[in-house]
Image (tube, rainbow, N blue to C red; front, top):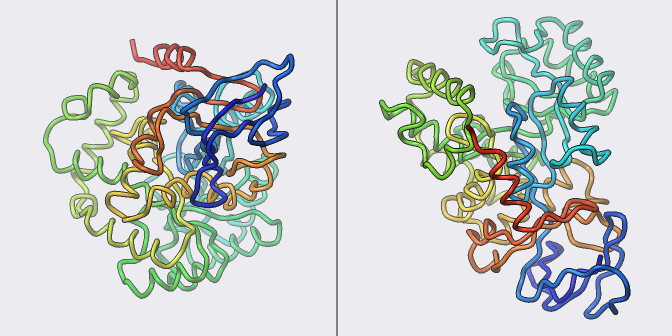
Length: 396
């Protein structure tokens, strides 16, 4: 396929290549030029359209059957799944082989925590032996990252970090309550998830940012949590109807159960969004290792649609430029996930994971949701096909 006369936002720099063509073969960008002669290849006229690399959701959970569809239909072509299960590894293989539609999946293993964890289904690691075994089990299963929750005992946590370093797998998650943030980062902890998990101290945020940790603020989910916890209505009553139609009754019931639990928990009732914006602003002022992530399907957060809300959050509440926000959803996660040789920018010899937009997202970040088409490897999803996908994902 030849993509004709497109305005390319390559994400290599903050600029636009106006009126360029791309030759795509077997899901790879083979040539980018001001004019490529059209032969017998099919071509896609993108006059007046803007093309960016496909977006990453760097913090999402594949917990509903429609998640892959909703992500891809919103231009998310790669995703970091944050709680691994065998069925997600099966889905990953099906997408990679072309048997299923969806974003490329990079998954953590099952969440690892202390046995006192309130998180049902997590892997308990109370001793150094438990921790080392949990690392080995995730490696053997074929997961890409390890994810920890914060109540792993101190000696077990350091054993986990040592074992992870020995086998070459990165550890991400909610940090650890039993070590200092300085110790956490210096132990090799790779990324902190959620603005609520950053330290409250400005100097410490600055320090860990300078030490090179990655960070996914997931502001959209925190916004929804604050809204729901401080409102006595249920999720369906206060969530926008344009998105609630994609939420099935089982998920909605989970949302309401989670909301009731959070309303009874003092820590959640004390959450203040301005504090989370402040922490994120400090980190962003001291590091470019900020990642775009939604935490869907947490209460109020619908896969795919929420990633565009989060892009707007990064601009409107954190103070990023549209280009910086887009970098958090393209080139930065590709670097974080160590796949920048294949994804994250529009360049020759990289995967043709592309989001084709009707309007320029650098002039207004909300144009990221004005989707004309999505390209994932060898497949083109035009607007009609995307609309059909969204219709199929609506709850009955």
